[in-house]
Structures are given as structure tokens and as C-alpha cells.
Length: 345
Image 1 (tube, rainbow, N blue to C red):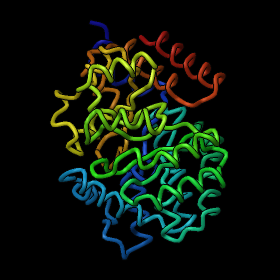
Image 2 (image 1 turned 180 degrees about the vertical axis):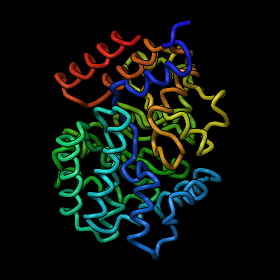
Image 3 (image 1 turned 120 degrees about the vertical axis):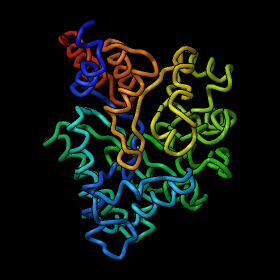
């Protein structure tokens, strides 16, 4: 057996593989190092300022508890300096994993309603984005998402910020937060407005609810990619539709276990998705909160799908294809992946 076929060899291959990530949250990417620094700045927070204590803090009972903890970390982002620090340091962590391109899901409403002036928020993420590309070689783009648990007021505000104050890095419009009790169709007017302004539609759907939520995202929100889509595997007709129309799924295996959306990794439906011909991308979602990173997610997917290094490189190219990077950028990154895989021994 060649080194590339062994677990250790594949891990080394993944570590050096040029990658794109399409489903990763801005605040949810804050490592214990970053969260502890922010918590130390704001000692009135319930979030531990000790990085070692954060592992216990990030142990989730269920999806609702995850949202509660997530929002406590959001509350650490209180001014433009915090926003800039978070954003650039997230890019630094991505660079260590050879992430070349990332579409970060940003929830501006969570920051602007806490008093950060909207133009200062936009300037902070854009300053960090430009610095990350120049200094770290990481190209970042934004998806502004509606926090579904905050209702239609948050949808109105997010659409306004996306359309009227659109930063240069913004490429898409999303919908996150809990799905149960938050039906997708009510957000149609806001997605219509964003899409009319040229933004791509990338809502979360079918993570903790059934396939009908994915259908709603497709029919009502014009979804071009689906965040999670875990329950799509329960509907063969939906899988056929996704495959036929080349609508990608942003799959986040460890996240699905951490939030109890899927009981065990062995039960994860990623194989059924791939076997149905769906364009599957692998992502980390909220990596430090789930004790993972993108390299780990690729290793998990490789095991579940029984892939060698050629198959793993194919997964990386799926993310490039499914991204909103321009055509020359896609061609460059795909060629870099091909060259890396061809040179691997």
C-alpha cells in the first residue's frame, strides 16, 4: 500500500491540499485563542477567558443550546476593532490549513443591533478581507445571512444592509439559525430583493427539519446552494432534482453530530448524496465550537466515502465549482489542486 493510501499519508495530503470553503460562519470560526482574547477584553461576559475552559463551554446539549452559546460569543463582538480582529484572525487560521478561498457567512444584524455602527462594521470586515488576501494569501467573500430566530425585522435589516451598503466582498444572501418554527417561505420578499440586486441565494435548509424545508428553499427562496441539506437524503425525488440541476449541498459532518442533527457519523447521509449524483462540498460550519477544522472534515468525508487522495482532490474541486468565485479564479484554483494532486507521492 502506498503512503498516500494510508491514513497518515492521506492526512498529510489533506493538510497541504489547496482548498475552498463555502459554509463557515464568521463568529463561529473564532478559535479559543480569539474567543479568549475577546472575552478578556469584555470581562462582564459569561464566556470563559481561559482557552482551556472553552472546550467544556462548547459542549452542546442540542441545537437550541448551541444557538444560546453561539449568541454569547456574538455578544463579545462589540466594536469595529473586535470585528476587524476576529475577521483577520479567522483568515490566519484558514491560511494554516491551505484554504485559498472562503465564503464566510456573516450576520451583520447581530452586530449592528448591539450598537456597532453599520458603516464601521462594513469597513472593518473589508479592511480585514483586503489585509488577509495581501498578507496571508486567503481570498474571502461574504454571505450576509438572516438570523432566523430574530424574525422578519432582522430579515428587513439584513436585506437593507446587503443591498444599500453592499461591501465589495459580498456575493450572497443566506438564512441561518434554527429551522424548527422558522418556515422558509416567509423570507421570500427579502431573498427576492437580494437576488434582484445580483446576490446569490444560499439559505440553510433541511438540517434539523425534513426535506420539505429544502424544497421551500428552492421554490420560495431561489436557492442556488443549500446549507446542510442533511434531510434531502430522505427524499429520492429531491436528490434527483439537486443532481439534475447541479445544486450543491454544503455538507458539514461533524457539525451535524455536534448539534444532534445526525446521531452518529456512521449514519451520516453523505454517501447517499454522492451516490445520487449530487454535487457535495465539505465544510466546517463553526469549527472551533465543534472541535474540528476543515482538514478534519476532509478526513472524515474521506473515511465515510472511502476516498483516496485522488477522490479527496475531487472533493476540493467540487467546492471550487460550487463557489461564487469568478471563472478565471476557479480555473486557477482548480489547476492548483490538480498540480498538487499530480505531484503527490
